[in-house]
Structures are given as structure tokens and as C-alpha cells.
Length: 285
Image 1 (tube, one colour):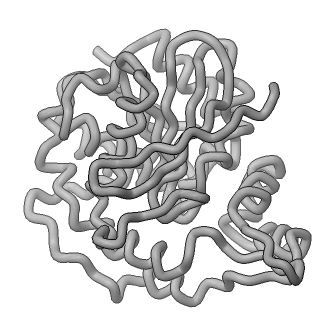
Image 2: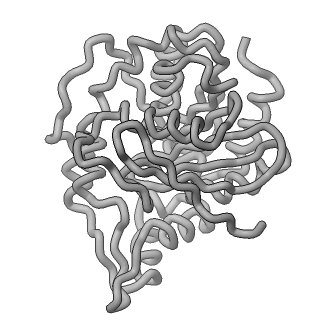
């Protein structure tokens, strides 16, 4: 597949996000990545979806090559706006949406904000906490603290690839996913060193807002069919959380994928692609 030029989209708050046309034919499918990643990590997943979908993937604000507006605090409603702006700018008519982790929450938040945007959703372990009264942002949580400690500069792409591939969570992902993460997730400076495009401070503030959105309280506004998926490994959010989320929605089903964890779409893109196709062929009641 020839590499198509990225599509720049300006959101309603002045952020600039990027959408990649990853090819394929059929129903449009818009894909939303997890915190700290970027849209190109889904290239191996798309390889098994192009026969069924025209695939698009987004770099959310402050991720990849996308830019966040200065006034954006880290509120996850910004990610929903990224998706709504992309659907509008690309002229997509009722696409299917796929989201992983915070990207899954972004899909649900977008559909809550503008019901009918998506024909259906597939959300792999979306970060939706069963809480009708969410707390204020917390910058002292372990994920934010860990993000601020993250090493962001390496001597070369090869050094970054070796480092990330040597320890979880990236040590468990598909090799092609890891290669795409490093290739498109770092920028090279004149001295040959490479630097993370998603800055640790931005990743930290995204984690700080993870529990603070009102996605759970508005799940009743989601009227399109939704498939909620999870893995079976210890680091997965698990069926119990998904069942609590599913109770709030009208048309939903739960899919459990064996042998994967929270990074399931990146660990076994083939299994997740097959699950997405099943969800389309057998939509939730």
C-alpha cells in the first residue's frame, strides 16, 4: 500500500490533530489509540482489516505529530473533540469506531456528545470508571508519576527500540507494532539522537484526568451498538468492569480475548482484528 500523506485537522479548540488514511475498502473505520501512543501503532492491526474496512487512524492532541491547544488542560473531552472534528473534516458518514484504552473512552465520549456520529463502536478495555460523581484530576497517581520519570531521549532509533523492547509493556507487543511505535513515536535531532514526540509532561496530565471525565454517567446517551472487549491476562481491566459499563448502554456485548492483556490490540493484532470482524457480522442486540 502506498504511504498516503497525513491529513491535518483543526479541532474546535484550536488543537491540530493528524489522521492517517491506512487504506482498505468498505465501511469507514476510525481508530483511536491509547495514552502515550500514536495512530501508526495500528498498522499491523489494519493489515487484517483492509478487506472489510477503509481504515483511518488518528494522532490525538499531544501525541505523535499532533499539537494540543495551549488552553487544553488534559481533560479527556478534548480527545472526543479530536474524533468529532476528524469525522466532520473527512466527511465520514456514520463510520465504525475502534478505540483502545483511553482511545476507547474517547470514542464513547464522542458518541455521548453527538449521538449518531458512529454506526457502531468496538472499545478494547476503555477507561470508563463506574462512578457518577468523578473526582478532580489527580496528578499524584502512579501512572502520572511514572510518565514524568520516563526516559525521553535515546542515542538512536536502534537504542530506543532495544530499550522499549526489553521490558513490559512493550516487550509483549507484536514486533511490527514495536517498530511502528519507535519509528513514528520519536523525532530525530541533528545530532542523531531521538526524542519522544509525546512529552512525559503531556502524558502525565492525561493520566491525571483519567478518572475525572463523566463518560460513565452519560452512557445512556450511546444508542449505537457497542462491543466492549478485554483480555484474560492479569493486567487486563477485566469482565467485571466491562459488565458495569455495559449495564448503562442499550445495545452492547462483551468479548473476551484469551492470552492477551491490556495491550491486546498491540500484542495480538490478528486476534483483535478477527474479533472486530465478528462484532460487525454479529452486532450487539
